[in-house]
Amino acid sequence: MAFIHQKITIVKIRRPTEKNVNDDLQFLGNSLGLFNLRDKDKSCFRVFIELLKAAKRKQPISSDELAYRLGLTRGTVVHHINRLMEAGIVIHESKRYFLRVDRLQLLIQELRKDIMRTCDDLEDIAKEIDGELRL
Image 1 (tube, rainbow, N blue to C red):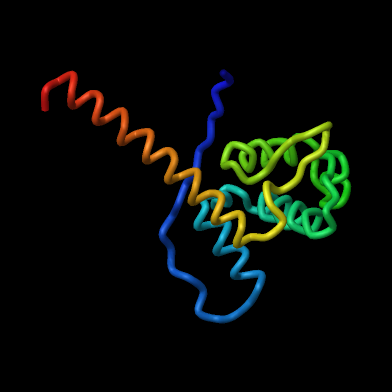
Image 2: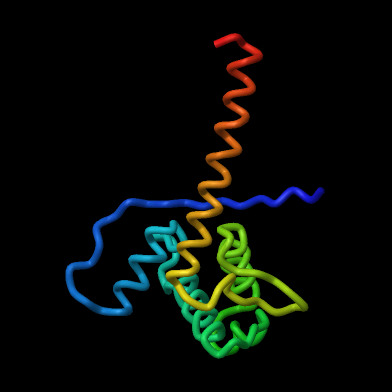
């Protein structure tokens, strides 16, 4: 059985008060811990948006294509893609990348399921440990 490492981060931050799709997308990514202050040129955000566009077209995209479209190095793109894959948001298949699902609402629902499965597993293990320690 292969071990799947997934790191889901949830950051509770204030939602933007103005209705602006760009600010809402930035809020979503920040809330998922995807974008940070060190990313001065917002390259992870730009990679995420390009993957979202590709998902809407139902066309996976390579790291080379992403780098070309965004004017970034392939190394930078791969770094951000790896973070997005670790978060369970991006899938890699045949040298191409795509979002796990093609709608953001479905993405959040899938992440919620991942979190709940992890919590259920943790609860089961805690129960076993309590039994062994007779707590």
